[in-house]
Image 1 (tube, rainbow, N blue to C red):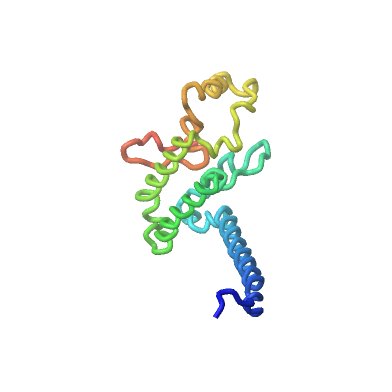
Image 2 (image 1 turned 90 degrees about the vertical axis):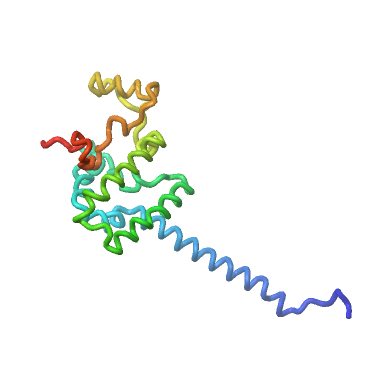
Length: 194
């Protein structure tokens, strides 16, 4: 018996068929992945849990990030809360499955959200903004593009000095899209009544 023999023609046919199947399955998997990433970045997906969490959605819809005098296109939930970098986005979405699980199991409800969960979640998001120097804000807002003449004197000075003071947007604008949660140890975080 020889080590070299004529290849079986049926086996040779399996290579292109297997390649085609791998290509089709890979394309289908990529399509499902892309749809999932896109769907979970939509406001409707975010609202599916947060609409029942007291005022989260209502606060956002009353903020200048949703509707403003300039008619600037609204920032979506994912514009502020989801990183644009691929691996950071994947890590965040994997981590967020825990919150989805707790919502589905009823651990997070309208009754316990404000007192038990909102302060924790707000602290986590605030810490992320501090650590990344408000990177999500800077996707749309740039100090270099600001018209300081159109701003008040104090605001213009603060914007001009924020880099040298190692400050970021969150240092002054915390609570711009959502009110800061009521905290027992810091009652000043409650938004003023209008």
